[in-house]
Amino acid sequence: MKFTKYCLLIIGLFFVFPHTTFSMKIGQLARKDFFEDIVGMPENEFRQKFWWKDGVLIKFPDSVWDARSKRHTYPLSIHHEWVKEHLRRAAIFQGGFTFYTIADLDKLIGKRPKRLSDRPQFTILIHDPENKKLTDIRYLQEKNKHAVFQVASTFWGPLEGGMMDYEASLTDMLPHAVQGEEASISAAGATIFRKYFMMEYYYLLEQLKDKLPTKKEKKDERLRYSIDFDKALSYKYYESDIKKVGIGLHRDIVVSSGYGTGSKDQGTQARLDIVVDRQGKVDTTKTQIISQVFTSAYSMISVRSKKLINKNVKDLAQMLLDASYEATVKAAYLALESKRLEQQELFLSLIGGGSFLNDMVWISHALSRPEFVDFIKKTGMHVHLIYRPDKPRAYPVRNVQDDIAFLQKMLTVADDINGTQLTGNQTIQSLIKQYVTAYYGQDTATASQKARALKRALEGGKVVAQKVVSEKKLQYEQYMTLSNGDFIGWIWDKDASEKVLINLRKNKEPIINTKTGQANFLYINPDVPGTMLPKDLILLKNSRKFIQHSFGEPSNKIKYHVTVPLEKMMVKAMAQALKK
Image (cartoon, rainbow, N blue to C red; front, side, top):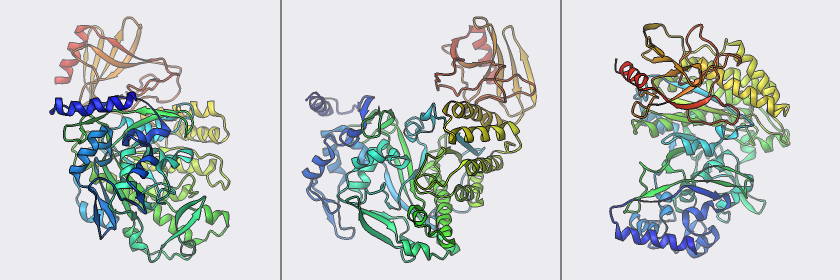
């Protein structure tokens, strides 16, 4: 009742303050209510009210029948009226969905794409079993505005497993939600659009449908879609096939919920603010906006369970993985290039490396192809690969040796793109082995410790040693200008009685706030082994060892990250150094 009164109050404000934007504030959302949060009613009630039948909302207000797609279209003016009844509905119609093949992407991008940044990046985000949110897709979508996320989805819809069945409800995803489902739940408005409002569903292998036709069958009382099993076993690879593989790009969509706790069907998630203007459209400057790329791997479950794996199906699985990663970076480029932002981030998943039982060596091959690596280098894209070890399965494919080999291969990819020398770092090599061994050995505490150490070592390794070209000494601090243009400073904090290192530049902007005198820094901790600096700090030759912690990300195990007021003289000196 209170919720209804609040909605009516907001509707009235549209008319009292016609030039005002409105928002629903951040809070906690029960996961089971993700659909109702956006639409204003439970999914079953929504389907009954608008007569959901055979993929059509027959009674949706003023919908128009489209003979070509055999679906109803929904004029934008009608969206406005419907949105005013419940403001968060605006998230459904925010952004746009496009289907592309790799051939389409190549044609649109051309041979000489514009650079997104001066320096390409490839980083590996290591899963910490005691701090899971740092590699959780919900948390990453919540925290990285305008970033692009690769969604491990299916070839149909693009919707998650079983959602193409008209009888299936989106809330059916909850009990078995993994990366793809979680990404979709977090961006619920866009998911609702693809299920209920998009003019047509897509088969991402449409241009290969003669070789790889879709098979439909009832399973668990749901209509399931799959690639015809016999066709997969007899697949013959042609080089031209990869250009015909498609992806779905859903641009500029709303993140309505973030990281959560509790069980998959009974837990809670952070409920994010959605700001809507007087036309009933999302204000993207004040709302968390991302883009998603939908792709998939071939599911090897049936092949492995029946022990029928052969060269043909391996070639098929490899071709689809190669296509998935190549198409993702190219689609992400289209989404990012138009924004002209300083941060151009793409987050990748281990497509097929979970329940679809693809070999890690296949994924490794796809991520090291020239078509993938060279495109990142050419465009200056910043790419983050989310690495998570696997969980126990009925038909286990991943193991300690294969995951170690995979991470070692990713070091060579990082070195190629970043210009670093991670591969030859014995500390990193040792940490990879210790981390993966501990994780698969279910030694959570050790795995977490090694994950943090590996994360620090990888970030420290990204920085190439720079020559000190100028130096300034003041009463409390010493400044140095490095050959790459960065300023760094040793600052003596009297209260802490310790020396700290602060980088005065981050994305060409100072980390220090010269108006308030607040600055982030890290205490020196000589007891921590290895090179342990975050990417925002510079490691000087012969400097002491540091404990690492990314700015703004608290940790319940690290007590060294603080914010302190600096003396006016120090603030003034820093500001002067930045101007030169």
